[in-house]
Image (cartoon, rainbow, N blue to C red; front, side, top):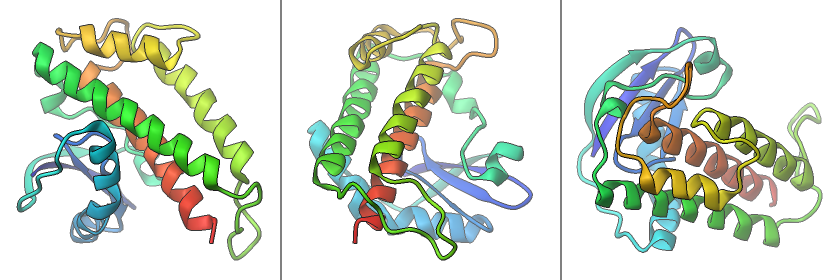
Length: 199
């Protein structure tokens, strides 16, 4: 499985290039790759929901990018060189299917989650409704990165399906491949957070 590493000064993210949203962090490269592998069974739920068999071989680090303050804060933030590759119709449809599946998995998790989630050791953390609100607000911000405003999920998916050029549609915007990976990561990461804090 092709992986790129986003290397910050405090954290490293290991992200699958072929499976958008499957991205985990660690204090160094080895721990980030270990975390990525550990989440295979959890990401398989997303792939299954998309109707795409999850086939994973040995991890193959094909690129390293320098991270920034957002990386160290705890979110992948850098565009990989591979994100500049053009998309075929089949590739665009696959990305859209995995993004849509990420949203569906998130919705399923929310439906079965308690309103109040287990808090951290010092009482920090959001409850379910607040996480749902946060994910929705982030979606609006992310949609603007691909040239959409007040976009619904279906409008974002339509934009992904029709994408061919890897050039961002606006200054400081995101290429389609990166946009899907970043949006899916955010949705899935919070789905897993809700699952982990529901027990």
